[in-house]
Image 1 (cartoon, rainbow, N blue to C red):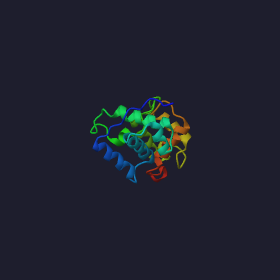
Image 2 (image 1 turned 90 degrees about the horizontal axis):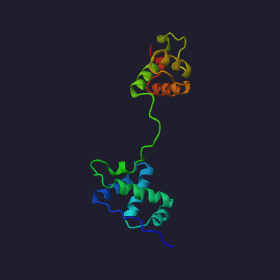
Image 3 (image 1 turned 180 degrees about the vertical axis):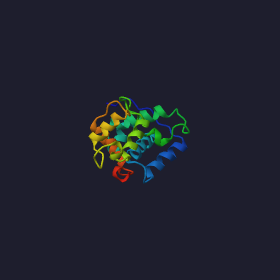
Image 4 (image 1 turned 90 degrees about the vertical axis):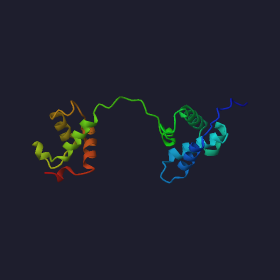
Length: 164
């Protein structure tokens, strides 16, 4: 029993060239190149099952990217590039509770020597930096683990013990 025919994907010459370029470029992330191949196969007249068989994927994946492409097709290429159309959609979730400015302050703190803050240690630990962050009023509460992750981010450019 045959199902309904999926909506056809019509590509402009610029869209087709951009999609083909994405599939050929060595620096294109594989998930983007794969999605580009799905859209190209849909534009070549294949239905979702044929696309899924050809690209060794699930029918739902082919259907999703066909629908997603058609939904974003009304937006001009100047406003939303072909690669941006193939990116993951923003995910729902709680908003960040630590602002970018607070993160900058925390990273700056991580770059300071602990002795400047009156701490008798040579390098920051998660517990020590969490206490100092709260003490300085950068944020009201922060876990040792989260402070440790931010500390690690601050160390990526410069070690805390190198400053003095």
